[in-house]
Image 1 (cartoon, rainbow, N blue to C red):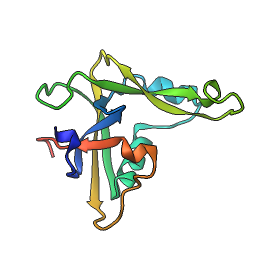
Image 2 (image 1 turned 135 degrees about the horizontal axis):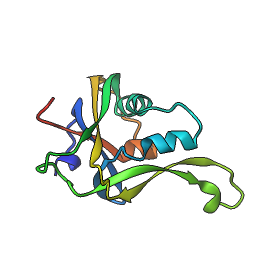
Image 3 (image 1 turned 45 degrees about the vertical axis):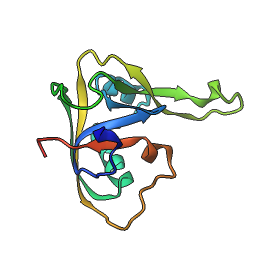
Length: 142
């Protein structure tokens, strides 16, 4: 599948891999998530992190778009970012964080991102969980 290829695309749909299954990042819960953290965390912040993690030098744009392209890989698999409390799994921890969960993504709004200037010869930050589970798949719009 396109998500499993080793090609880097500078623009396309942001894909998430969870437990071996690729899916698109749904944005309908994003505003609620930001308010839970009582912060001004935006899609642009997410875009900057994704581009840097994938060893692109620059972040250009990120947007929430309606997923109308039925020919893309994993068209029926969607994930959303959710607030998680590690204390539920580690009783002596008060660490808060984010994780991904399956969603039906009823509005079908997903992330489209554009990065620029892939840094060849730079090892991706694959030692982090974030880097091992994110990809941008190509698009006819790039």
